[in-house]
Length: 113
Image (cartoon, one colour):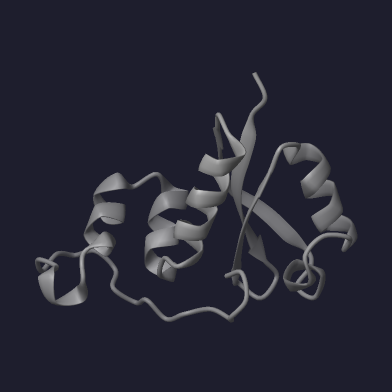
């Protein structure tokens, strides 16, 4: 069975890049060499901070598109594996209960962050 990977890279400037591939090792090498996306090329070095696989390219593309629209705080919750925080940040701000979760959702650059 062919696997398709969804991944998040942390760039030198602290921004996040989300992508998908059917060959994670090769794609990471391309990012490290500056041969992949322009976003990461200008922000090297990059570090793989999260990845997971899906069974189809369609699922990988769909999940990549959803994650790209997430707030920085929600991406960081995913990276940390904190599913309670992912759920918290999935709610609109006016529907979030008061908690001790960090709420600094300052955005990173445009593009594929």
